[in-house]
Length: 207
Image 1 (spheres, rainbow, N blue to C red):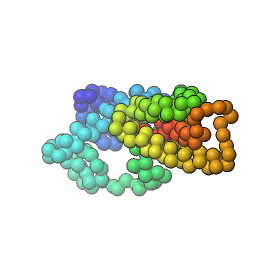
Image 2 (cartoon, rainbow, N blue to C red):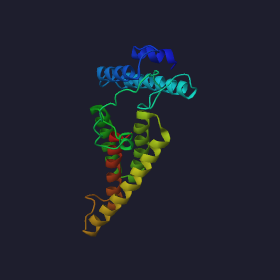
Image 3 (tube, helix red, strand yellow):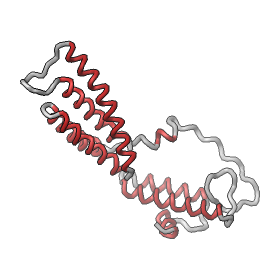
Image 4 (spheres, rainbow, N blue to C red):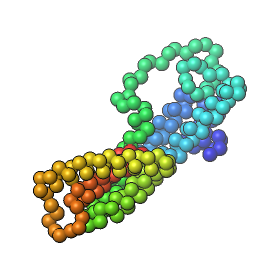
């Protein structure tokens, strides 16, 4: 996205202040609530403007007040410090991973993972393999970060199998068996089911 297109997207000009840029971003994001694609366009324009101003600052072409992180118009006198903002309830690094899914983001993956859990009653290994692929897909389509999607999926698989096998062994030790004749061990079925449930949680609430 070019710098001029970024300003046009936010309805700003190159002379707009840092506060104007933030207000325009927040106002437009509120107006497109629920429209993920439009929100991504707004965020991309906002990032492009900030990066351009940061470059100008590094080149010494504009002066920046100490109170902000990115480039800004020159200021002749120190500005009144902004009032302290309330600290977020969750740390910023956590916010980068946590997602607020829509109903559609939860329902369709849920249907798929429930179907895979059904397959896992007879073929747990196949269900897990397909579940891994689905989880990577659902995560990657949110941020288009393939390697992070793969890492989160592998962590979920490791935790899911570890906890699921433990639960399955406890169940087996209590004499729990599958209600039908099957060559599949009950531990494998429970481990696969628990892992698929964790896949749904990770793909829905992380990004």
